Length: 292
Ligand code: UTP
Image (tube, rainbow, N blue to C red):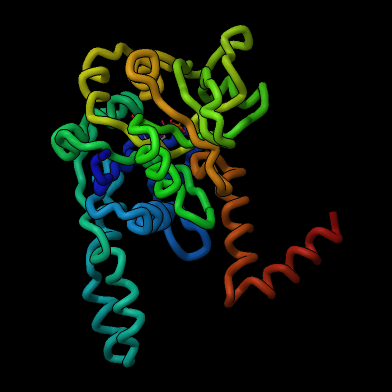
């Protein structure tokens, strides 16, 4: 019987250099998708997957994330005076549906380095990781999909998709073997930012993983890799080489909010589905596209 997964870690301490100059003033994890910050979608995904405790890893200049999960008495009193109790209830919901904890990374030395900060929070349990700038819209929350695979094989899981040869060189590449079930794989090796001759497959890791606590001892011994950063992929490589991991081609559309195109496409996608502005926005887009 595998342990139930109730904890999640959201690393959000990266500098976000691809999103300068805005990242200097607003953490990329707080950039809006229509009227909600990216972080709100991540916490909602975790909560809907059965997670009860979330650790957000922050750093200097990321205070907006912490403030978001607080009550705002100024807004509350204004709204209550206008009889808008349901709006206040909705604003409180995110702070109340899960316990959100915070820790600072101190120095942004890579995703692996950030995850190391979660050691005492995680203890001896398996846990989910949601990359702070990856938003995934899906029917079933992706963390829940991954937990399903963890419960099936009892091994750490990476969320995966197939990408192009050009893209894989910027991401990671997985060495996989079929489990016999569609979209489920055993993973025995992986590499971060492979050169063309190092590519195992076009399957990459995207945004969500389930890890076992043995990752922390491995991370303690992981040297800086690609870009001089302590890479989570390098530690997961050791896990896959030794006890083995699994990969799930998840159902859902993923947006990289650490890139301009990802931010814009996520907004267009959500705005079109938004009940209040969707129809007007669709008309606007039609007019704009005609002129192209
Ligand atoms: P990225 O590699 O996309 O973030 O990490 P980055 O380093 O901020 O990106 P660029 O290249 O400078 O634009 C994925 C997630 O991991 C977090 C980021 O905040 C992001 O949510 N991260 C990254 C950390 O928490 N600490 C780090 O040292 C690096």
